[in-house]
Length: 125
Image (cartoon, rainbow, N blue to C red):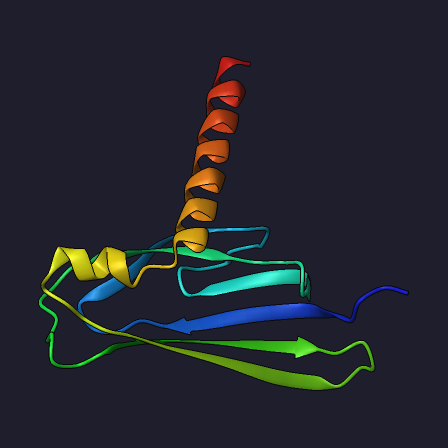
């Protein structure tokens, strides 16, 4: 028995003012800067985003991220899954590390390192 999966899954994202998504890691096709397309999506797939700070943020308000996945279920139904994330804004660097998800951070660093090695090996050919 295989886990449920979805096919033809575009992912749209919204960035808060002052922050931008600079890069993505994962198995997807990127037709333009805002959309990611997955051939199939299930519980074992993931995507990571590198967020860059580009402006002044109000530390009295949270920053909100939103992404939507339009997908076709295994039963053939078209569905939308919406993900919202609110993160606190802080001027204290220690708070950034205190509230960070270290598992996600280390996974991103490992994937980025792996891609770096693959780029070097590819350039040697």
